[in-house]
Length: 224
Image (cartoon, rainbow, N blue to C red):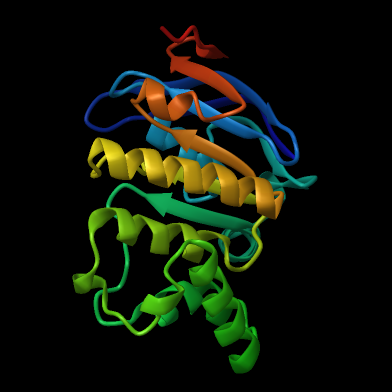
């Protein structure tokens, strides 16, 4: 459902450098893939390209047969909004909105009606174990609970692909394990594909397949 063929990305400032070189990747429907790599290996750049936030200098990216090269910026925004969900290390939960309204944001942006939006957002909070906290504000939550809200928000609109960038980087070991189990479970329940970028071997092991990104592209990882 996601294909990258010979993708390259170069930057000229402050000096010419190639961040990604001939990256190939195929993610099947419902597959959960972890990508590891050293700092500076291009993992975040790769996620930005998959998300359509940046464009490759060479190669091809397609989601569900939709080639990114044929889309303008508005088209990429609509693709991202309707077919993708995002979970970040820093949560990015809006502090002035309660949990229900935070989770509802993707539905609002996609033009879903008010009643259906409220019902689906509440159901997702229930699914991540926070149904009784719908009226709570983000400042009242622990880091693990914040990431549960982020997962609910990422999946509430039924995306085809979830992108998770170091989702346990700000969590203690116990909270990280709970979040990883929840993320894996919710992906399986929804049928969405997922790409996890992480430095953590423990996190990577929760995926169906683990790859390493380096200057030669993506290759199968050998975890200790």
